[in-house]
Length: 217
Image (cartoon, rainbow, N blue to C red; front, top):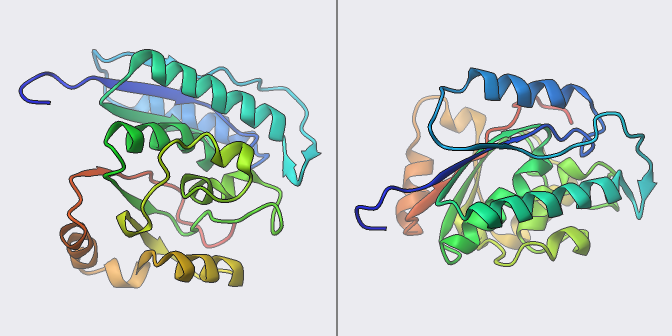
């Protein structure tokens, strides 16, 4: 980018249907309110706050979530930012920004996934899509979502930081993909595991969604 000023897009996305929990709406609003003011644009993603949800093809609110994903993709493409700050609701809100940034940087985006959960579940194990987002970013899971990721992430450029106990299908997925893990207790005293991962994989750009650190979904 040279000395050009990089463009940052701030997205306010009060998505709640991914976890079927309306409280996620408040979380996104609070994040946006707490964030320092900026000259960079803030765009609200349209979300129906009163719509009823039902299961479709093993996923709750599948149609609504796909519509919101498409709307987010259109907004991001219209702005073509160099950076994105997401004031999100549930975890699925991060799919479009992260997919765009990995494509923007030619698949070289490193992803520090700070979460107690790996979010690689599929409709076979759960019907809440907020627990599936990392699987989509790797090109797996429900293909209507995964197909929206034009440049799937390189598993070597992903680290799961703060990971707690995992279910069998999650452990198998992580091992099959060879994704690096740094558990909570390993990061309590230093961040060397993260720094070593960045250096070993020559990570030039880094994205880092920060989710809740509770031990239960």
